[in-house]
Length: 313
Image (cartoon, rainbow, N blue to C red):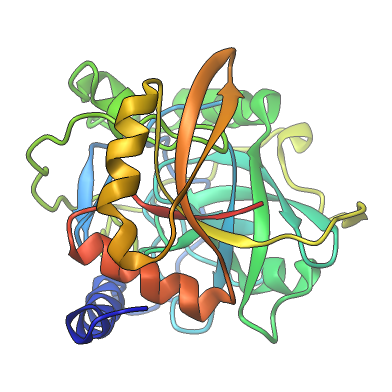
């Protein structure tokens, strides 16, 4: 399915993603903190532009990974000390802190986690959970899992209010994002509306594991807004992996994109509705496994389709 050039792109992107994940040395004597409230400005990693934003309707499917030993004791993107045994996670765009509900679509396990870091930065991954989170969700050994991630609005609002009330608000907040760019680039619940491309933003220091903010004094957190660690079980149906290259309000735009994607496989166009808006989504798949999804996604990003993403359906 992939050309030799595309296969080389896979290797290059994976190396760049790994290079982006670095931070200072662990300091075991630091006192864990709540950290400060942070949304942040747009940034680019490995050709993918991320636009942090407040989104209490966030509800997406994709691939989860986990991180632990290499980052334990280091600073997170909002000034906390990372604890691989805590119920936390990293997300590329959601505010820190936020509370999300993660459902493992392979075994039905459900767990709430608190977002306090940026990442993952490998294309095709939507959340990086702590080692303890992966253990409770049942994918510690395999490393990755198909998941659904949903923001818990009330709890996330409580966390944001506490963080803002007791600590420093991030200066590069959502208000500084130019009007219109959020809707063009940020992922929406399950679907995203594609827009005309604009010049990419320069790489910013937004990603976690590179920032070294001053740790702050702990602020008490309301128990109702904290993850309890309780794992629940829901029924899950068999699912497939797809690459979604775009979703459009105009069917003509979807047809044009599908035609451009024919070198990568057999794209399909399907109609759906999101928030009462009719959209035509363009997808490749179903794909055999995560490895094939990673390869196709890397080729698409390399060839100029940077907002493509892996979805589970």
